[in-house]
Image (cartoon, rainbow, N blue to C red):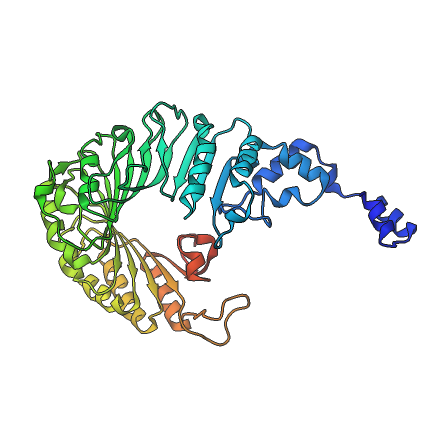
Length: 456
């Protein structure tokens, strides 16, 4: 039904309809190419599809916009199949057919594919549909246990994969011919070796999350070549692993520069020698890593440049003494641990080369004076040059700024003044406050800048 017929059917007087028809919407007079470009720029950063955001929203405004949106392949390059609630996709007659329609809209452009489903049968059906377009896969994230036996297929533009693997014969992952592949993230639930076949030797970034024995990932590391520069490992199994389980319990990765480990189970640290290690990130039970790290640094002869820690109650002085060459220190500090951080950094003999300090902390107002004194002391020695502080607000305060959430808790005026005084010592300092911790984590756009002397 046309808009005019609809208005008449609703009893609208013809005069009103004529007035409506006379309205000119400038946005509808733009050339289709310009409108298409605007549509492309409107795509959300979050890949989760919604009928209230592009590209789906663009097809619901008017006939012209729908025509332009459906004829713009760039809008349909990212496919996300995800359950937002129990049985979401089972209510559809044929989800795989909808995926195929989306694939056709993207024409021949490279694809980003994300499949997050608990229903393994449905996930397998969707993967099989997408495998027909394997030559267009660019980035793939499959957090479902599926079979991807693509040993005879070519993936010429595949750059990054994130896959889940379970130790069962029907869960096979074979992607061998992918010359552009550089990053892989594998989550494995396996008590034996991880039976995933990728072109390991060409990877530069590898992330392993093991929910089984550490033996699942060590053999794969032995196949990585001199191109590997970053490794992330986390383990959820809390039990010791005998070295006799490994054919080669000690591996040297000669070009690895960055290591990220989560210490919730057996650590990969005792099995590695990393002569070029420069950047280390550690979270979990840090005290258990002090002796393994001491041994790692001793046998690797590396010169660590940056250290990132998630800190609860830790022996920080012991850890800091292992890494005197660190110039950048980043800490995510839970509120009770802030006094320990301040105490550990109070001596300039600890981390003497540090020139950049970043602290991410919960609300702990009464400790900032001590932190300021540490910053002032280190700046006085002409070492510390840059410091950033991100505060996650806790508690409820009155008189909060308009638009801020109820848990916003501003810093006292005197504290801000003392931080600003550090600028007179030559220290560049930025203080940010999260609007909402869950939304703001690693998202600077959702933070409020309380103080920034970088640009002053």
